Image (cartoon, rainbow, N blue to C red; front, side, top):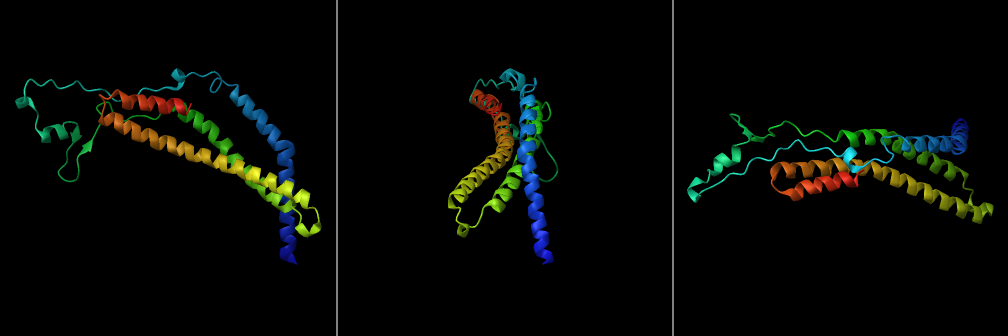
Length: 203
């Protein structure tokens, strides 16, 4: 009996939280997000406002007069590397590390808490709707079907919100791969254009 009363108490508390979320929490969140969208950080921003050049210089091309002027393979391989007595050679950038795009990082850090809260709120709504679904034998089959459809929509929202977290991670992974390509092939303009397209896609 004690366990069943605790379960019932938990359900009642969860229902109250969900009702407050629907009546008060969601409207407040909508107003807050609309205010954020009206800030200069989000409203009417151009690509040039968030674009950040890579800190990767393009080396001067090597002019060869004949085949005899070709540098040795060993010299070409380790011209821009740090050698040590043991271990592998580590390639470096002459101008230091390539920083993250601070403009996009600021946007991501601003949005992430709201995405996380949406996942948590969706989970709360799922549990609330599940507790509210009556048993089939109660005879209210039409109401059950509506609640099940609503539950499916909430689950879809939760999945989409979770996918945004994955998209953030995929952006940084893709950016790292593209930057490594630009560093490896600085004379190929296509790699730089791929990086610019990635930045546009995520703004």
